Image (cartoon, rainbow, N blue to C red; front, side, top):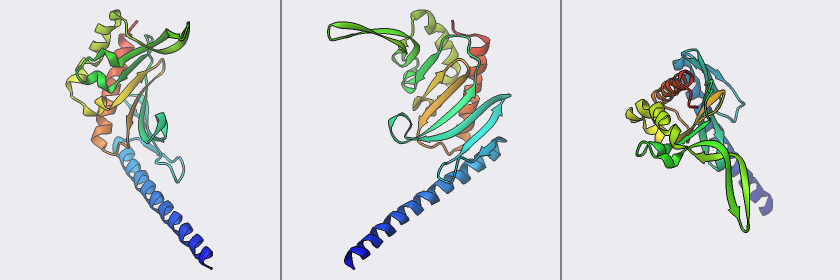
Length: 200
């Protein structure tokens, strides 16, 4: 009898935790529905146990805002993705690039890198490599205006600019409408700049 009661208590405890998590997710879903409405965007459900996705357009440029659990190892991340037709180099800029701006240790492109492992050299393909000097003036110009805005959220995340999309990733769940608006505005500006003057 004691064993049965113990199992009931354990089951009840786990059910209670699941209920708390479910309510927490539903509150996040409601917040994202509200943000989508304020942005004039569409809220897309991804199931009862996910926050869902915001899909809209900024200056006729499609974007999405969504959360990803366990992305990049741990915790929850917010990912803002936007269309960007980049004909130049792929670009990876991490938050520390903006403190102090420009901190070149945190700006990369993709390429081949050779590393010495024991007694041999290994060439890694399509990995992050530091920017060459010839790109630095253009990259600094790309982010100069936005660095002056002192957008703290960009100091905490990273920006990846590929051929077709640009992605901003930050740890945690963004729930403030004004912060999301600021991110979308800055990404739109960066996309327009890089499309008109690609870094080649």
